[in-house]
Amino acid sequence: MSLTKDDIQKIATLARLQISDSEVPEYQSTLSSILNFVQQLETVETDDVSPMAHPLEMNQRLRDDVVTEADRRAEFQAQAPDTEDGLYLVPKVIE
Amino acid sequence: MHTNTLAGMLADLSASRYSCRELTQSFLERIAKYDANLNSFITVDEAGALVQAEEQDLLRAKGSHGPLSGIPIAHKDIFCTKGLKTSCGSKMLDNFVAPYDATVVSRLASAGAVVLGKTNMDEFAMGSSNENSFYGPVKNPWDETRVPGGSSGGSAAAMAARMCAAATGTDTGGSIRQPAALSGVTGIKPTYGRVSRFGMIAFASSLDQGGCFAADARGAALMLSAMSGFDPLDSTSSETQVPDYTESLGERLEGLKIGIPTQFFEDGLDERIATPVRQAAKELESQGAYCVEVALPHLSLSVPTYYVVAPAEASSNLSRFDGVRFGHRCDDPKNLNDLYCRSRGEGFGVEVKRRIMTGTYALSAGYYDAYYLKAQKTRQLISQDFENAFSDVDVLLGPTTPTPAFKIGEIVDDPVTMYLNDIFTIAVNLAGLPGMSIPCGFADGLPVGMQLIGNYFSEATLLRVAHQFQLATDWHQKIAPGYA
Image 1: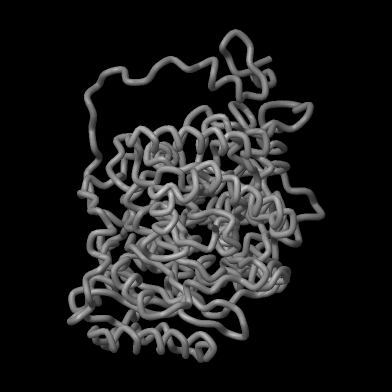
Image 2: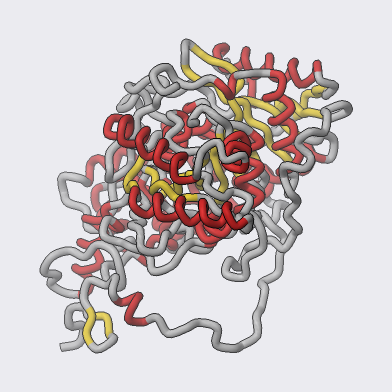
């Protein structure tokens, strides 16, 4: 398993990570070696094995459908890089 | 004061040999003296700690104090603390001050613990050496050219240098047990679901579990009793009753059946590790336990399985860091996509980006079955190995790590070699079982850890075995030269 430079940029785009051209070779070599390493799983016979998503056999707990949270918008938005009138600001999306 | 155990400090505080303020002050002085060099704290809250300590002195005077009243502790910087920076070891959260406390933090506060500060860690808990921190590596007090282990390296080093009476940590693939072993302290990762994950910044949600470090098993039992329990704010929190973990510590080990996994000693395990661990098993046998060999035939699959499951979950969990609601935002974003890509590209370090990309690839269209689904199946096989073993034995015993602490910079450029450092700890997280590491000897002057693994919710048994071992040995009392 050997990833190309294009593969790295494609994965980085999917993951919304800017990777500079000078960083690509490092990720190319280490991601390839990680994928080679995990490929040993292919050799294991698992046809009759059920996938394990979680360590505990548990059902999703449900609670009554009532409001339990206080309004702390101002407090939470104090953490934000940019807000206005209770809204989070981002660059214009629709022209 | 600092060389005392947590239980010893509680006794001294109750007998008014010193006040909570004096105890806190003495730890703050040790931090001021040693930590500029060790780098185990990201944030020290001197003023806040002294205020909390004075409050505990008042509560003690009134006789209405909690079980950990006045005990100075440190929190791994992955636990949200209201009003105190929570960085998770990342540039991404360098400016983040949580608006609420993690459940672990609020429970320990109600028990009366005093928070000295927040400890250094591998960024987003991804690492086995603490070299992946935005705030720089932590030095191992036993040899300052070596790593303390990771990802809870700051908590382990702070405990080892006795800069706190106990510390919290988290363990996704060994991040409490491995640094406990490399730094020569006692550490426990309880059963998945035992300690609330609310306010504990998520890495891999089906594996993450909070736990603690202390100088001895009794200290860990006192901490864990206060930290554990059902929390409606964590959807996978267990409703299983929490025992007082200190109650059964005194029970002898007659008849205890210990499984020694043969796979833990294969492939030429470093004799400097194997010998003290086998010696520790003999000590437990001399106390009436008996050891049998057991097999964990799928153990070698645990690291590759983990490096599909954990990055996959991480790539999803870390998508919340988008530069919009909190955390780092790049300057002058051209458009929304640029804001996302540059904020994340700048805010995350190399290892975090590597894992997000590994997970993104494993979950991407056309590869899901080959990687993620396959890893979920091998996870099942690994888990079944433990189920089979625990049908016959009470606990499993083996080494915590394949080697003692390695040099800072020695393997940081080789991720797969670094990942293999967790070969003995990772399977426990995949199965969701409790595990702990306690000091059991030295290899060329560096601490060696013995790992105990228990069945689901058998923390009391692990702590009892550790405590009985520590009654007969003094490895846990050894403090790194220069820090005694």
